[in-house]
Image (tube, rainbow, N blue to C red):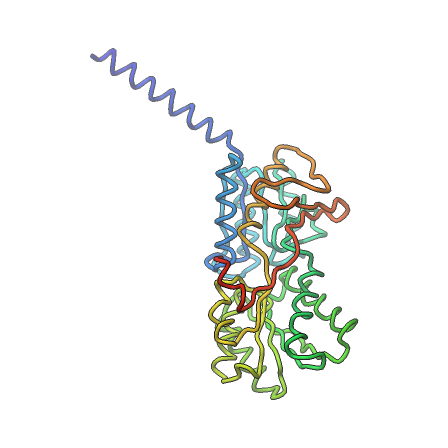
Length: 327
């Protein structure tokens, strides 16, 4: 009996070692969002998990509880210390990420960006939701249809150092200057990652500008604050809200009239593409000009010169189509 028990224990030990080895052999791809706990990044997490299951990847999702660049960098460094094979980051501060890119390279880890870029950091690739130009142009073009070409528009953004948000604002200004010279875009106000602060800023903008016709929420976390300020001020129909918001975030505000529309993409697909890109990097596979990604109806394009893997064009969510989406 003791002999049988010894054999069983030995078999169990061998199985445990084999299982551990298999777990270690499974590549790990991490995604570090700008902050956790908001619908947008929750959707990216869901897409990343699906990709992990489909592609045989151990997906790691971890990020700061608020939009704090220092905390984000520490989390990235911790992942590097753990030896995660590929790490993607939605960058909060492009000026400070280069050292962790170098630290990752020194350990043979692929560090790349997704959702928000740091183009001069040496990152391996940027997984972009849409072009910055496309996003900036789309929101201005759609807004002008509703408020006219000579309206005054306020801008409420998130973290002041967020590369993607600042790039979108830059292209909004470019579009206005080139196509709508009478459109007045007020200087952006920054709310960090809180809807409460966005609501206060929006209320102040409405009070200080009686002729204000619209407010743009540039970060998904600021969308509720902007919409709530319009509702609280009794300005529905007089001030049109919009922003880069998921359908679930914007739905009630679109239906109340506080928001005329929202602009975005499918963040769950972006999360999936992020993990797919990480797996390609780990496997040493070259990204092609046109790439077939499992579950994607259209090929995903890659700009080798800029190092950008592009999800696709932005989507416009309105009262007519918002209920067709769930993210």
